[in-house]
Image 1: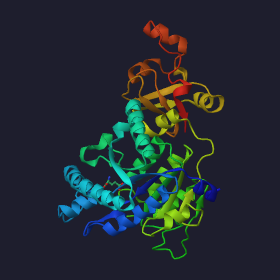
Image 2 (image 1 turned 90 degrees about the vertical axis):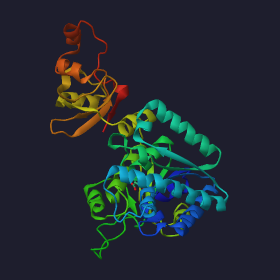
Image 3 (image 1 turned 30 degrees about the vertical axis):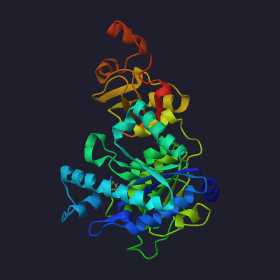
Image 4 (image 1 turned 180 degrees about the vertical axis):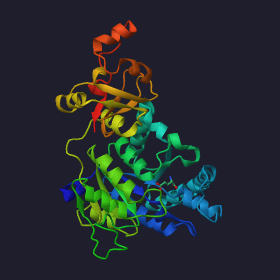
Length: 373
Ligand code: GLU
């Protein structure tokens, strides 16, 4: 299965971690960038479509601005990102010019994808670039991103991009060989896990033990991205980007890295967007009857099954639905605001008219706008 999915990959997102392309002392690693771009150019030449998500702007900027330590203040990080990003893109531009490939820079914030119209616009831009044989090089728009609109880490950004462009495969290149059963630096018996078919507890624990200092992610965000995209039918490959030529050989079916099998029954694109891209603005606590109706009978959510309403949200916002213990069971777009739901929670649908004099919707979340988690 792993070999079949890898060899048949048509469109892939390749996330390149900070430590591969830049260091705080030496700045951009031009040789290393050249080596990765050669591999990517080779892959692109075999009728595959490559989209790059590259980190490294902040680290390259820190070196250029001669900061002694990694800045903790947001404005300093943003300044470093602005200085580093132009150098980073220049390095890619130069390297891909040598392989004869065209590149384009795209900087995204979470807001660009949370709005359905902007999401579709971004998708059109990227697919047009791909059609022209251009390799898009994407990063978070760090210089203008504040907490509310951030992706936060590039593993998660790369996962969102894989969804945005309907990729078959997400490749995460870093300076480690893949996911190990334990931290190989402290446990000599640790072994590389070549294939993950399910996100079990032991997989999550293995992730918790390995760390990569320079990037914001570490193994935890990589596993999280793999888990997310897997639900949408996208496979993930964790690979050591320091090893020249490895990615093209793995795509020919050779061993290497850790491969995560995707879910065999992926969600539709719109439901993916609700589940994966949108951020919940509030929470609805549901009773067991409502949870059963959603999970087992494919029903919409009605006001009678809501025990509690948390957060300030408007009609049309995404909310998370939880059980009594706070475990998320579904996510969806609500038809009513938090204020209205406070008044109608626990009531029968027909009571809505009695309370407000009119009733716009039967359901609090229509089935078409609801994703089970
Ligand atoms: N966007 C950041 C940068 O380019 C990196 C974030 C990350 O590594 O996850 O420097």
